[in-house]
Amino acid sequence: MTKARLTRRHLLATAAAGAALTAFAVTPSRLMADEPLRVAGVYTVPVEQQWVSRIHLAAETAEARGDITYTFTENVSNTDYARVMREYAEAGVQLIIGEVFGVEQEAREVAAEYPDVAFLMGSSFMHDPDLPNFAVFDNYIQDAAYLSGLIAGAMTESANIGMVGGFPIPEVNRLMHAFMAGAREVNPEIRFQVAFIGSWFDPPRAKETAFGMIEGGADVMYAERFGVADAAQERGVLAIGNVIDTQADYPDTVVASAIWHFEPTLDAAVAAVKGGVFVAENYGVYSYMINEGSSLAPLGTFEGRVPEEIMALVEQREAEIRAGEFEVEINDDEPRSM
Image (cartoon, rainbow, N blue to C red; front, top):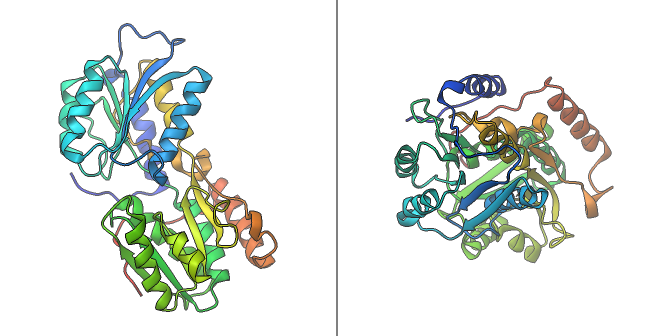
């Protein structure tokens, strides 16, 4: 498999094509459309972690509505991931969700063993039509990341922004590039310090990395990982959040955040399984702002502190994005300091 660079048009076309593949649909024989769907989550990190927390929240919301029943296992090591998937499949779960960035091949092998179970997995790769019950998704929230970059570009006084990520994989890279593009639209002279800590959940390491960037002149931090906002708060610089809004915890530090809403993705998958039309396709399209899968968090405590002309530009770009008139580039290449 190879990585794919996508545009909104490609994703929309992929989704439409997948929906047409009803001949390969998962059709659980005992499934009733009005019965709660049995869903299980398999996560390699705690459900408090930013990325997984959005999946977990969407599942709890769907369960509260009565659409699904939901159970999950967190902190699953890569070596145990396939085993946990099999246990849920054997237990009669109808839809398994999770993230397989470290176990791409193993997860697909499990899915092939259970063709009557639907799998919706966060992945760096595209779906395979030859594995019809394995759909993929990712947090394509580059629209919101771009808007947050516009704000960051206006708030930095040193024209030096620090960026701390987990791993240089597509779902991280594309958001960093979108953020950088937004910041450069406001100030083309901005320099970026970019580093990856090699972990999805290591706040102390992220914090130390952020300290180094702040010492190197960064006065705004892109907080892709937990720990970065802590460093920014301690050193009196600003931060931009990613995936979740942590401003309540850092009211004088976090200016804005690009928020991921997993609900449209999960709701579409649940409806497809219940309707017997779940197929291998890329559910990443449901994370686009045009599909309500992402948003820019309210300024909150920073209301009135971001220049009015920048907020006018943010509103203009958001309206254009939602109307399909402005397309944020998707760049999955690893970003570099510059």
